Length: 353
Image 1 (cartoon, one colour):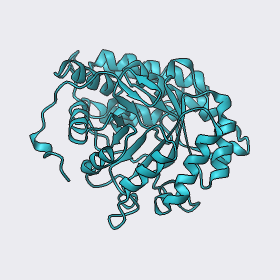
Image 2 (tube, helix red, strand yellow):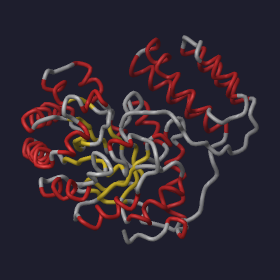
Image 3 (cartoon, one colour):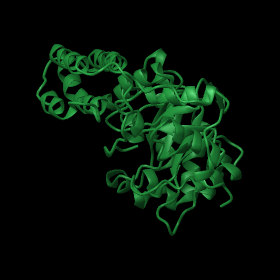
């Protein structure tokens, strides 16, 4: 590996916007697809605070082929979410091509093929990162999807199945040859899941090996991590996952640091309250009050993590059952905090992406 030591890096200005295939993004920081989290409400709140692009939760190509209602509800989006990619996993070329043709009705800005999901349920069906062990089949899936639709197709991969088979460079070259407009590299192997330290050097190796844009993913926990990732690897954009859970302001902070070369203050309690209320309102619009209030609990725990008095509040939050009760509780909680910036601590929640 030829990249400089991470310890020698300091944040400096990078181009504020970035061109990825046919898209010109307003930010080099994009929201990762995360199962159970990145529904329309979270995508909108992250776009509002500066995410350059968003993705659906990972969908099943077979679900699309079967016209599964849940699949189409998860693929649906609103205009303010653009640029928006639908991500799905497939196990064979025909399935992928059919899904792309069917989901084209949703009119996303692109499709993202997931070859990185490490979850056993997906792996056992020969999907996700299982395909990293069969590059020819993986490439045929990409090629079939590209031929099936005029909508751009991107790909997400990992470094390989395990440390003994780290083939990200070969996989990236194959998907580029198959017609992918860019590749996202999660800098861990399948066997590592989300543990250990992301190996950014490999993202740099992929970037050097292909002519298509590369998005780097893994261990971007705060704004300066994104700058360090961009510098260290030369990648075109940074994908943000868990750091955006309960803290969409991470995109604002990355954009400010990229544009001006200096950090901006963390979010204040009043700013957090505004975001929480809007996020909840949008979830109620999308899912109805009962489901939204229950599903919002996991988001609310992330919004208050690390803040003073958050431990007793979390216990109370798990009992709230109506939209009005949640709004009342969060207004009381944030009103107790001094109106100063609070640095957001890292997230340790396990999510599928």
